[in-house]
Each structure stands twice: as structure tokens, then as C-alpha cells.
Image 1: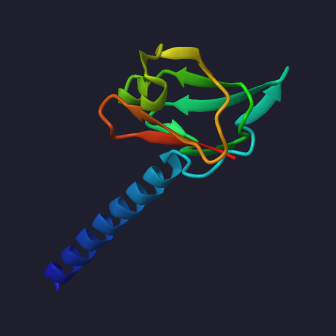
Image 2: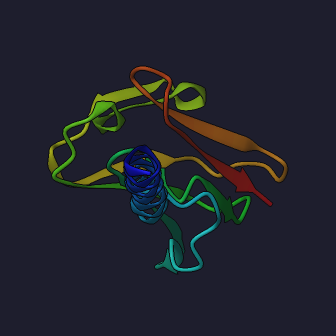
Image 3: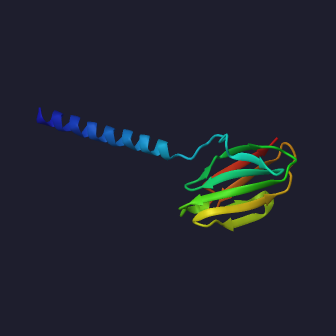
Length: 131
């Protein structure tokens, strides 16, 4: 009888820890979808905001083609590999500051172009689809 009670308590504790971990990790995931507010047009230039911390957010951005563009990389206490960004199609590679903004100028892109950014280790990525 005592063994059954101990087994039940251990199963309850393990279940509680697993469920708590799932909830905690779910809240901290980087957004996989388009953030409605990360693309703005200011004075004829398209500004795309990408947050870098524990990955990139949003991971997918839809932008306008054939317009000068600036990618604004925003960091806020970033100490992981996402602060070392590479955009191969632009021949761009840079270490971002731990906190701050870094502007990356992009020439107008043709419709259908998909630009990808990666962290230094290739673990995190983001893409910009120009339409």
C-alpha cells in the first residue's frame, strides 16, 4: 500500500514538472509567423524590424518588392549566437551589439526574391519574402 502511494506521488511530480516545462518553453518560443507591425514604409524606404535574441522574430516576413529597404536588427540583452548574423545574399556578416539597433541597407529586390538570414552557428534563421 505504501509503495503505491509513493509511486502515485512520483508520477504526479514528474507529470507536474513536464507540463510546467512545456508551458514555460511554449511562452518563450520565438514567433514563427509574420508580425503584422514589423514592416513600415517611411520616406519611401521600407523598414523591416527583426528582433535577435534566442533566435529571430519574426521568422518569416513578407515585404514589398522593388522598393529600397532597410533591415533594422534589434537586440536587447542578446548574448547568444543570434547576435552574430549573416545574410549570404547580401554578403553581410556582422556581430550585433548586445543591446541596440543595427541598420542594414538592401537594394530594391525583385518580386519572388527570398532573402535568408542565419546566426553564426546556423541554428536560428529568418527569411524575408519580397512580393
